[in-house]
Length: 260
Image (cartoon, rainbow, N blue to C red; front, side):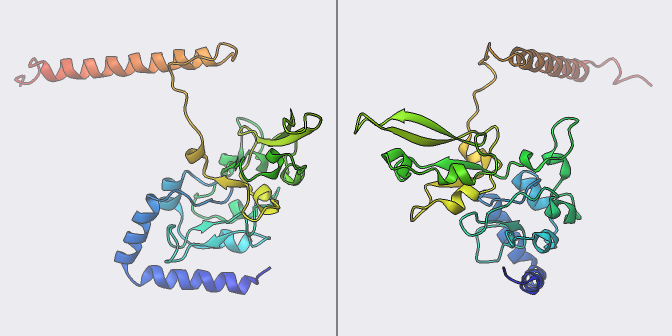
């Protein structure tokens, strides 16, 4: 592990660069907003809000016991001075006491973001990114037995499961293929770190880039709360329409305009 002195030196250098010219800072921050590829620490706000809230102090970097976090430099396509990590180098090891979040003084990292309803904070609720499997380079999909990512996953059997399929080539064996469950994947990147192929066949990307959206006009009848979701949307839409109509009526009325 690199020393804390190196981390502090990077913080100082980043601060000096940030203070050297508002124009440079503005340019870098603007370009970062257009490149949402950075993987942020657990508990981070969505990227544009995170960039606004982060004061680039580097305290989360210093607090990380694994030296996972780094501060973005001018040459990187990320907002200068903000923390990020590269799983293939050092993943997030999901500290159960979440030191990086506790160290954040600005609210860019929030405990609330790893909580669900009334339950206590749990690092397993972190959604730093989502693992994606490239089937063409994953040797498990080509029939070679490999379950390294599955075994290394902190939520083994939940975030990554092995699906047994018949090996069509031999007709006698089974392929155990890793499949990611987005409901549980934290985006920690440990799977990417341990992947045995030359360039990782499983890798982490920001959630928004690798997830779709069904749309409110589809209803999953087997899910109890899905129809209620549609009802809530329709109620909100009716309320909005009524507010708009009321505002238009008021603007078109001249009853009060000439009262003294």
